[in-house]
Image (cartoon, rainbow over all chains, first blue to last red; front, side, top):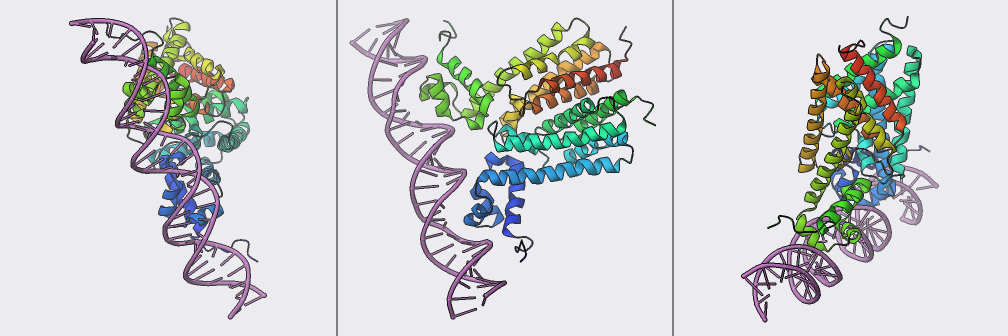
Length: 197
Length: 197
DNA sequence: CTGTCTGTAGACAGGGCTGTCTGTAAGATC
DNA sequence: GATCTTACAGACAGCCCTGTCTACAGACAG
């Protein structure tokens, strides 16, 4: 009794792949269900079976974005070495990588939240995402020995959000560089330039 | 031969006032022309006489936002005193003020750009706005004696954008405070804590 | 009086959107 | 072979959207 019998490349996956691509490029509101159906080669009934409301599809899209972006952040931090201090700065490499990516269009969460009614499920999911990321940064800041990890995390995530938000307009990597520079300065100021050891 | 014969509170002003309010609250895409007509007490033909396309109204809305926000930035900087260094930090009071305002919903430019097709007039106007603001900050940084005014301006506007972007979710003033703290740190790092002399 | 300008009031077309519906086909399980 | 699940194909209703159109009313100038 397999819980999921659908093969790889199933209808559900195709729908999600297509939705991810189109939603990110044009925003959920800018993409009709018919377009997703046409481009994913799926029947309308199938789409509505898996995602009874369009909002359900939007939330699934955000979950996928969350995995991708948070994953990229952690990977960038990991690649920066074992020192939490370096990781706090190194995570900004994820921003640089995103800026360089073809079709980069800023933060999917912010973009989607901007066109969604306040207080709705999309906003809630976005707040949740931002909270989880900031909690992770806070933990990093704590391990780095910051006197006020919450403040440092708030400052760094603010920089991340700024870099991502500007991305709606252009993916100029100089933005990511400036963010990284700022992060280095803020981390040094919070921890002392001499290092933690 | 008065160029503008329409009295104060004319149809055009009422349209713009209503559009400003509704566009900011729900995003241009989330507000139909019919709603603007109903709430401003104006005939449809009148609206389309002044703004032949909805996009024209959106651009007029952005112009008004530009005046308001840029004006608030300059006012906050002015209120910080005559030292350009203090002004660079003081302009963040405009962010604090915005966060505290009833109905605060983030950056109108970013929100609008997020739901507009890339390469369109809305994007162009938004880029223009950001460019003008950054040029102003760059001049401030230059007058403050920064070795690299462009970089400092980039960093500070990044913080502004981050604070504004987060505003789509909530107007927690702690965000503005964190941004101001960051600005102080970055300015001190760029100019030296001893002051410009 | 006549024409022009500005505005009101509202019908209308044409299109896109979400979501429901009927009908059909292929494969798995009993 | 019967049945059940999954999916495809597409018509359809009902709504909202932008933008155009006609008809009318008041102010003002010649």
